[in-house]
Amino acid sequence: MSQKILLDTWISVRRLRSMNAREKFVQALRFKETSEIPFPCMFYKFHPETLKRWQREGLSKDVHLIEHLDLERCELIPVDMGPLPNYEAVGLEQIEEWRLGVDRSLSASLTIEAKRVEEEFPIRNPRDYESFKRILNPNSPARYPRFWDDYVRRVKERDYPLGVCLGSPLSWLVEWIGLKGIASSLKTDPSWIISIIDYLTNFIISTVKRAVHDLSLDFAIFIEPRMYRLTCIADIDFIIDICEKAYGPIVSWIKNTDIDLVGIDSQGHVHELTDAWTKIGINFMSIESSGGGDLEWIRKTLNNRVAVIGNIDRRVLAWSKRDIMDEVLRKASFFKQGGYIPAPDGIILPDVPWENFTYFIKILKQTSIIA
Image (cartoon, rainbow, N blue to C red):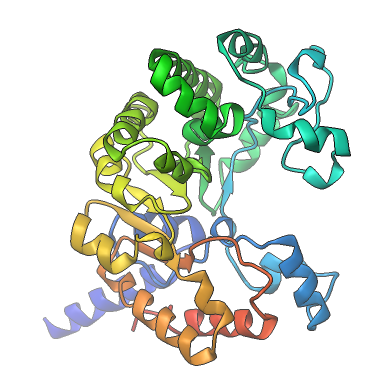
């Protein structure tokens, strides 16, 4: 009997230790045991100036950083969820049907004139919105790679997690209308904002429908880098209501396609929204520890209703090695409870030395093997 128990234990350990990146990622988010901590590269983000600093401090310029740090592959499918073509900061009316616009995120490449008018935002009224919808066509052939069928065949036998981005509906509102425009509309015509959200919901579902049909995906995720700004102009109950309208139909639809892991990646102070997210059906999240959503608070508040990725306070990585060790050990201890993948809680800024970051990775890997 004892020999059988030992054999079963050995088989179990061998099975766990042979898990690939895809299995570890999915198992961890489902609160199941894994062989070791996953290191999904998608949740390790680096500011360009950080890389320049690290290169001055010894990082070779001819290496792939992800491979150099021994992080694991984790990707989103290459479906373009933004405006197509991208809009010009100097005026939406200048966009032609297939003319490539200026990417607003590349502000360094904008002219002085474009920078001056950038904050006017492309949508100022319902008339602008009707025009803007022309570049939110879910059926645009440019949304999918030209060789999509070849891509589908290639990733079917993958050993890494692959997900679909569900867009950034609330961050898009902030980017396209601006806080002043949203605040004004909420006072004069809130139904207009709701109609935009309804359109974006249908747009997102229609855009990703082909991908979800063609591929067996591991997760779906909303990327919301600007949503926290809405808390400056609206009370929390209204934002919760907006979240339900923006996310609810999409989450219900995606789960009916057999994708059971649906997450959100957000920045800033959004911890007050986490309970509403879980009620909608979002079951994993990546939020900032410093934004009030520390992992210990999440566990006490939401228990095991939601898994977490990240949450290691990125500010600590610029402090002493003792501070880094304390933060890593505190957060990594939650991994054994299930439902947690430790990683930095946001983009790594230039105040983090290369020596500190490599030490962080070393300490995290040392805690990754389950005895």
